[in-house]
Length: 292
Image 1: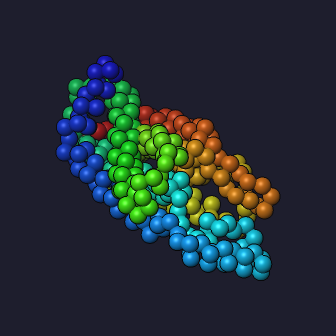
Image 2: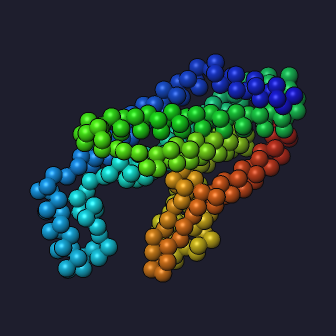
Image 3: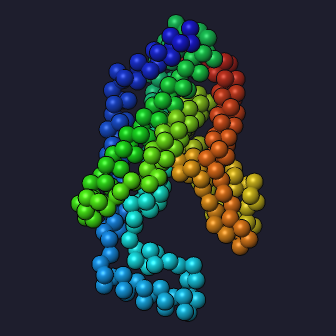
């Protein structure tokens, strides 16, 4: 039963207009995101390098920025930096967009009565929940990949046109970000589906997600008492960056040492969240009256 239902869910993704519309939406986002770093991809001229060196000497002499580097003074982004700080960091924006799309996708079935119809033919609710969550994970992964590939394509075209055909080289770190982004998209898709099964209202599910992100962000950034290492490992945004980039480093935390959240840490965090949400969603979905 599960295998047939899973095939049905995946087939539904292929033929639903809102799924294709979602792909167009993330493609548009992928086209817009590179505008954030396009102004910094031109290699500096010899005169600009000289001025940057002089500025670096000045800030170090007056102890204004003892850790600053020449690359920071120049303001130029190498392609490796574009991958890490541009494409990789923007993947969080795409993930948030993918989350909202999946919430809308699942919530529409509750509001239209399609979920009630499906339960008529597949009364085992736990199977329906599992298949829909996994299918939404696939949707999330596809959305992330489409957005990342679009943003990367625009960036590569711009980088080559400005700096020449040999300026990119082996594109260090790009494959790592693509793989991490797809994994994160899958996790986000599953989480979004489970949240909507728990709160079967699209606006309320979206609002709940935003509140959680805002609250954890405020606790993380505006805390009067520095967070412990364990607390840092429980911050959603930091774990998301770790999954996408391979690791997330909180530099010189508490002026003592760096705190590193690895991709494995991020995966464990999200899997724990998924298991907790699945348990709650299964409990509520089994007892909820789904009206057509």
